[in-house]
Amino acid sequence: MAVHRTKSSQRSSPEVDKIVSDAISLAASGSQIEDRFWEARLNTRLMRLLKSQNQNVIDAALDQTFRINTEAFEVLADIAETLAESLTMEKDGQSWDVLLLALPVVAHTRYQIPSGPLPVKAVEAIAMALQTSIASIDTRLAIIPWLYSIDQMPHSHCQTRLLTESLAAAAISGEDIKLDLKEMSETIAVLADPRFVIAAISAPSGSPIFRWQSEPPIKQERGVSLISWQTALAETMSSLLPGCEFELILPEAYFTNCRLADKYVRPLSIRAAANFLESTLGVLPAGLSCVVAAFGEEQVDEYRISFSLKGSPEIVYGVIWPLYDRESVANDALNDMSDDESPIKRICDALHDAGIEDVFRHAMLFDPELCDDCGAPLFPDRLGEAVHAELPEDAPTQQPLFH
Image 1 (cartoon, one colour):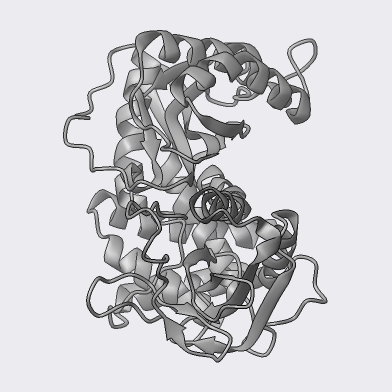
Image 2 (cartoon, rainbow, N blue to C red):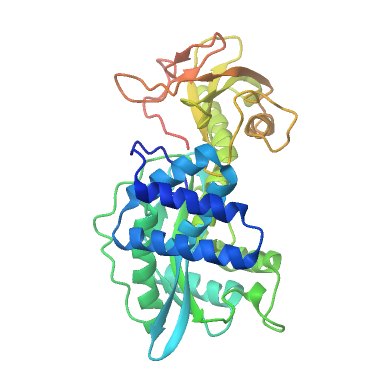
C-alpha cells in the first residue's frame, strides 16, 4: 500500500527532481502566501501524474525526498494523499467536497478473520451509525458492500484516486456504486489483522463533514463520536467477525486510518502469537523467550521478533513489526530503550504485556533475508544468525501467519 515505506528503483528524472525541489521549498517556506504558491505547483504536478496513472514518478519522488529531507517528505506525502483521497465535484450547480473514508476494525483470533461481501443489513447498520455518530448534517454517503483485508485495498495513490472519483459520484448522486468486486484478490490468512469498510462522505463545499466540525447542537467531540460509533456497531461487527476480539477505530481519512490500523495491529500480532503458541505447544507466555532485531538494507524497515521455548535455541515462530513512512530509527539507535516512543521500546512493552519477560535485543542491522526455498522471512537467533522459524515436528502442520 502507498501508506507503507516505498523503495523505488526508478532513476531520477526531471519530473521527479521538480517535485522534490518544490517539496523542499514548501517545507522551507516561512509564510502562508509562499506556502500557497508551492502547494499550487505541487498540486498541479501531482494531479497530472494521478490522472495519467503514473505512480512510479510519485513513488520515486517520495523515496528521494524521504532520503534527503524528512520534513519535505512529510509535506509531499500529505499533498499526494490529500489529492488521492479527496476532491471537489460539481453536480446540478452545487459544489461538493468529498473525502474517502477508511472504517477500520482491528481484530485478532485463534481461528480466522473473515473478509468479503457485506450483507445488506450490515451496510444499512454502518450507514446509520455513520449518520448518527460521525457525519454532520447535509452529508451524503456511499459505502462499498465489502469487508476488506489490507491486501485487497488500493495499493497506490493513483488507484486510491480512481476509487475516490467513483465513490464521489455515487455519494453525491445517490446512485449505485459501480465497482467490480468479483475479481477481489484472495485474503492471506492471519490471526491478527485489520479489516476495513471503505466509504465516501460528501458535503456541500465549505460545510462541515464531521460532527466534531459542526456547530452546537450537532457538534460532538471525537471521543464522544468514537464511543457512539463503537456502541452502534458492536452487534453488527460481532456477527461479521465470529470468534474474534476486535476494536473499532474512529472513521477518518483513508491514508490516516490505514496507517493507524496497521500500527494498532502490531502489538496484537504479538499477543496472537503468544496465544497461538500456548494453544499449539501448551507453553504459557512465561515459558517463551524472544529475540528482537532490526532489519533493512540501509535503514530500518522492520523489526523481526523470534519466539523460542525458554532454554532452547530453536526458533519456533516469528512476527514482523513493520515501520511505516513516518517512522524512522537512526542506525545508532536500533536498541535504544530510553525513548518511550521508539519501536524497540514499544515491542518490548508489547512482549511484556503478553506475559513474555525473557527478551534479548540485538543492536545491529540485519539484512532482510528470505528463505531461498519458500520465500518466508528469516528470524534472528541469539547468536546473530537469521534462521527459519520451525514449529516442532509434533506440532499441528497448519501454521497461521501473523502481521
